[in-house]
Length: 410
Image (tube, rainbow, N blue to C red; front, side, top):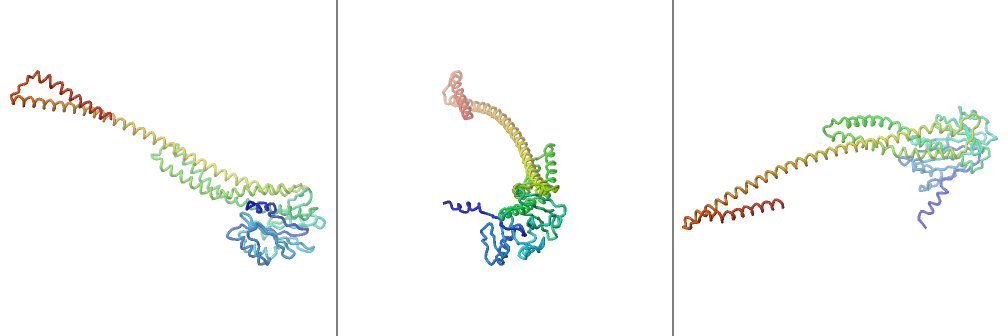
């Protein structure tokens, strides 16, 4: 059996919902998992629950008296969902229980989402969303009429977003799944929106980079540079800054795209229907959420296009520099050819002079030899001497010329 078979198979049962009956409150908190926050929260939960949670697990559901706590570990964040049954005289929108309040206060800077869902039965709810403190709420009929949800998406003074869900026929299983979808929409929407400040900051940076790229392109087209090194160094520096900026934002924009897909999927799973003249909950969210996602995607694409433009300018400049180098090399080779031709001409002249000088010295030696023979009493007629020594001298000179030509050819 594959060592990962059981773990991979059990992914089918991962992240179950909390199944419950109305009326109840669902407190949901999401924290960015930075600097060991998840481990610290699990330690606090262990103190309250009286047992150590399974830190290797992705999630766990704990019973704390009449309350149910579920924690989940995600890639970038950590969530806590606490189910508190509601009494008939209980508050509509209570403060979080002490456990959640303590954790939220301690890790307030990492708190990315805080939501509270009030689940009411159709027979006992007030009949009007405004009576629950909402102003101009959005509402939808969910799950083929099985429930109704209302919210105005305005944060309380404590930073909590409130939703009212009226159960019109959902059992505990479907009610848990429906509330889970609503909470996931809020959490993943906030996680996706984390890229918005990065995108706004990058927009200013990219504008400056675009102006710099335009100036560098103008310098390249003017062709007034005595050397391409300064321009090439400037383009390389701009490319390096763009790469650093892309590396810093690429993961954030990719996460935004993934979270946005989850939000869209969860809204589709709600199977909404309009309630009177009120905007649907999903329509209200997407009308404001989609521009954020599109803006981040546009900034990401803008950064990629700018990086490609810088790379093309860099390639163009390098090509021009390479062409000029080749032209310079061609001119150098032409100059070397001319020098070689001149050297060959000089060499031929030197060879001719060498043969003349050798011939002069050779005939001088013959003359001295004949004069020496005359002094010894051996008289040789000039005609005979010329007939013998002339061909001999010419043969020797020809042999020397042949040897010089052979050495040169070699």
